Image (tube, rainbow, N blue to C red; front, side, top):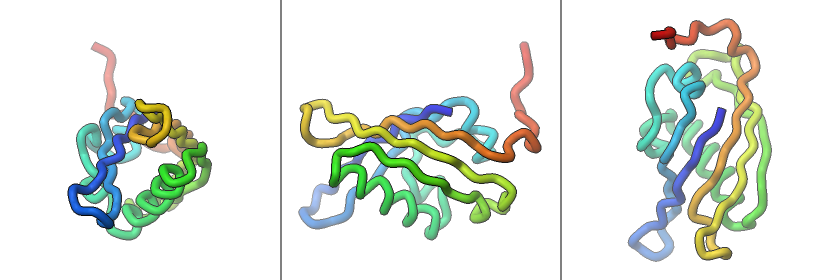
Length: 119
């Protein structure tokens, strides 16, 4: 499942970065149970999960290097699911990361109904 996350730089110097999901592949709807495109981290995750992603994405932005990890979805009441994730930094000016391309593989997803039906 593919995603594209925008790095939202604060207007106030020294304030933390924020992140907005610009694109969330259809498969992510099954994981989150709703459309997450256009939402910020705090609109999608509880505070602990938002802090996790803010930390992981912050390291990626600061280092400008790809990152990988595993995140359990127990925060969503789905402890049987985990996301194995890959995030790749993108910089429109060649230096400053302003977009993050993501790929998620959900372990345990086959137990969930898709909610998507053929026309």
